[in-house]
Image 1 (cartoon, helix red, strand yellow):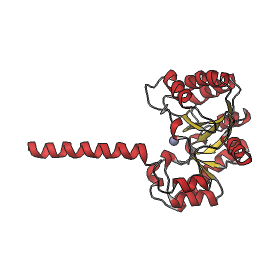
Image 2 (cartoon, rainbow, N blue to C red; image 1 turned 60 degrees about the vertical axis):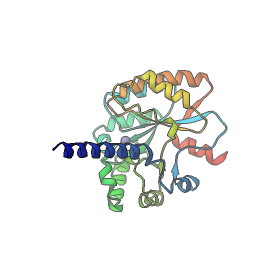
Image 3 (tube, rainbow, N blue to C red; image 1 turned 30 degrees about the horizontal axis):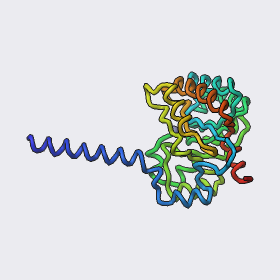
Image 4 (cartoon, rainbow, N blue to C red; image 1 turned 45 degrees about the vertical axis):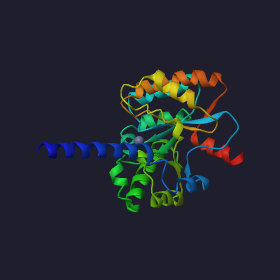
Length: 248
Ligand SMILES: [Zn+2]
């Protein structure tokens, strides 16, 4: 009995370490990542000497937290890119319309946000997830999204090829600019400190307006925008940043 329990505990321990490792590194270490970046099929940053970056928000829209983020952005007159989840967006067409009217870009973050669906690596699933959400965005706002951010950062050869032929771009983010703002208990100050400490021209900052910690994210946004705009940084939508990278 004791031996069995020990074995099981040990097994769980190693499984935990393995999963932690996967969670931290699977996105960065996809064997094709460098090539995809070079071919601009997956965008993680843009090459520019100007102090310009893109601010992106995932997992919304949420009736409470998204308006708080919109208020923070409005205070600094900043336009951002919101990667909305289809099933949430279709319940809030008016909020979606407001986001577009304020000048923000809407990106596609799948319909279901179900990582296990994507793991099936099935073209028909990619297609329905992307098309449903594009239609919801188009009907509510008139915008046709050009950027797709896969749920949970899912990547595969088949998915990247499908998205690029669609044609859309796989809109990733800059590793150094993942403040993990969605973690409950993370304070706005800590989120702002992470963004400010790691800032470089051409980065794509990932945050979450649609997570349970969204009000702290909104506070963090207000704090780092004050600091970084004071330091001469400009914030543009992700599509604008990609365009700047092409003309530089
Ligand atoms: Zn997400």
